[in-house]
Length: 181
Image 1 (cartoon, rainbow, N blue to C red):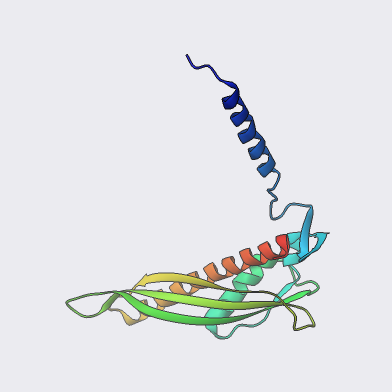
Image 2: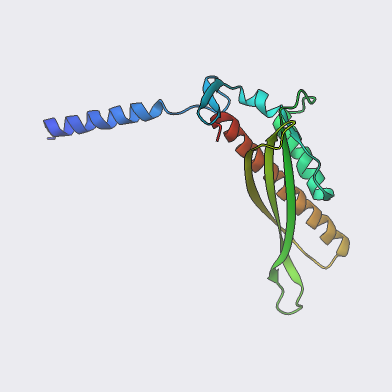
């Protein structure tokens, strides 16, 4: 039969106290409460309301337009534009490559589209950068012998990658507004 000694009980109590202390460190992104807006300063921030004050500048190209529209929808949830407190400039680059090539015909069977977005968020009316970063998204598609099917498949892959990029940038902006970092 197992009989606990004093050291085992103390260890168990210490582990329980540590778990309880760490549980108090958790704060949901959309939760109310203090969050750092600027490093060293604390204020109560509604992350969803802060995201609605972000303006996304136009992005060049069809894929850039798709990504911008996705990002605007993710930030505002379909609401109309309100007062602008921040502006985000995104520089988008695209790279495509053949992932798998048919060894007999020499025709690419699977292709990969990679999108890279470098973004900078500034306060509206200033050039002071408050957050910068980059995000990468990759999507693959089947490349067959039909030219128009290939074009459509490539567009679909670009759209999927643009949606992934928009979600990643939104997550990073959420983290900024929740933590100030």
